[in-house]
Image 1 (tube, rainbow, N blue to C red):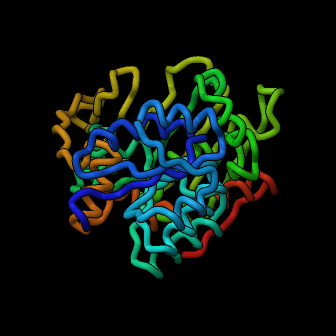
Image 2 (cartoon, one colour):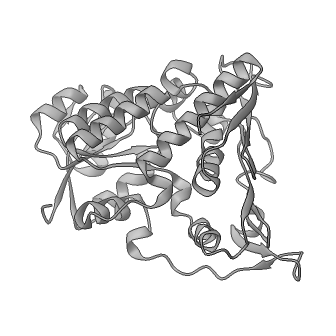
Length: 342
């Protein structure tokens, strides 16, 4: 790998791109080479903020014309997955925003393309860079709360528009083909990921979803997944209609010897409860190493060192998360439980 990694940007319609580009621009080990997006307004913003005049309307043209080591993909779940497959088939490393695809089939095609060319595929989840969550994952792995037997996560806000998402972002979030669903795909994905990473694959998925409050969209605005294991359980909740923030983004991991909680109401502190301290006490969270500080630092570090990506961002874990989400969609649509292969 060259000293400076040549990176192309595919898609600007996923608003998370503007959160991740500053660290890429500032990183001494990377060079932003070109961008592709069909929307002139977004291209102009990119030109202005990142001083890059090598622009394309078509993703294929960027991939074929530019000499790239890696691409960041910030398109819809469906179109982004298609672009990732092409980039990986050309041997170009890919970082793509969660949940990686709009369907399990797309996710599996991405893995197959990566394996065929030995290109690296990292799925970026914003919560993967929470120091509290990284430390909680470490405590679970080291047995600090015994055997984990339940994971609960609720992702919720008042809605993409209410949150301030751009029209470009909302256009595909509210399109079941481009997103893969509505709130279920967009927000239950976080809880499904944590359950998969901590507990493994469930044996059965039950789900419900509905358009409960928003009359101006056609996809579900609320959803819940219930995951069954031989010796554990998990729930993943997603809401686009929650007015308050009291229960939003609360993370709970229950073990046989204790409980871990990350609660936004406490400033995202990590709390641990045990039999001797049932009310919970704050756990000191160590500073993150620089290669774990954010998506760019981690992606570029792992490309240069060939180290594995952190567990939450590994392609196989995220492919399995996609299977859980697909099972949940089927379960909610058909009013049944969906068994998963062991």
